[in-house]
Image 1 (cartoon, one colour):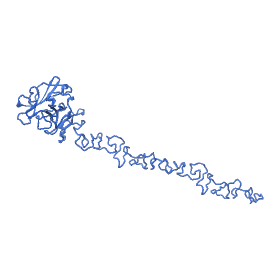
Image 2 (image 1 turned 180 degrees about the vertical axis):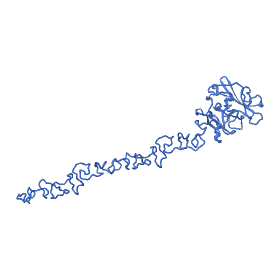
Image 3 (image 1 turned 45 degrees about the horizontal axis):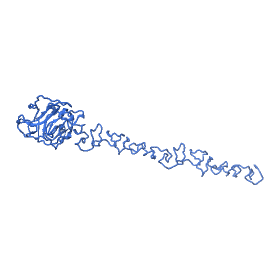
Image 4 (image 1 turned 135 degrees about the vertical axis):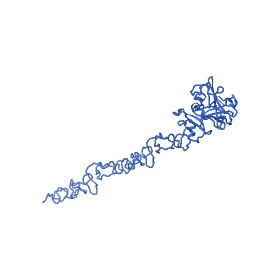
Length: 442
């Protein structure tokens, strides 16, 4: 039947030419319709409600739109331009992407896979990370905090560092260059080494095993010169540190050790010259105080006429058994020594009745006998085993002390029994001109 009949042949008015009322989907665009394709396909250009398809209408236009969710949300799977959300589009897909900066740079805060840059992602974030190897090894070139491994970071780099304690202490087991402490590295390993000079000279202050050689420094003095040559018979003559009493080395001192005469091991205690036309060695009112001992460096081995008197602290501090007197420090032929155990483990000073009192004087006038020979003329004589020419009668080296006013005088001379009571102070018969006399003990 007819739904209408308007008697005209206009097909797009209120009554179509087939006498039916117009409707959406009849294939004729009527007033109020944007389109009418007469089909029920929602994916073409004309929707089933006779509206033209557009992005955002919620209907997917096939071949035109990738998606159409009908909303204005840019953070879901379908963007507002009806394209599918994807990494790199510059829009954050909530719940799927951590970030999306829309570029292809792998060294910024957002990676190309739309994940936030982090330490361990194998991508070095510029200005943030020094390295990023993506592993959890702390012994390779890149640490787990994405900092490049370096000496001092407290982590041992395999095949590169021997150790790494993370401190700057050069005296512990690990040096600051991440090498294990060893003898010869020029760093004293605390509690292990006494010294470390880094050289291969075994005869200097520090031995090659990093122990202190006795006598070379104040902190490692020998007890006396004899100890040095007992340890090493090849020890040369020279100046060494000694400390007769032992203990605290603050009072150790330097002394000349004669290592070539009569088995060596002799400690120089006195050297008296005649540069002032006398053989007196005056200590003034100080009483042989240590301030008057003189500088051991003044001993000139190759200069017997050197004008420096010298009194070593060994004169009053070193207990010994034997004494040797030479008129030239550099010629052993011009010397005589006492019989064995002459000093009997006493100091030379105590032998001639002197007290070892710093800053004070103590002169004795009592008669003292040495090795069977009494005082002669009020002076103490040290009787020797024989003179240097092998005379049958023993010679004597006389070391005398006297007190006069505020001065204490020490004199050294030569006499022998065949000359009666005459003491030859300025010139001995077999000693020539006594330009310098050196006294040693052992």
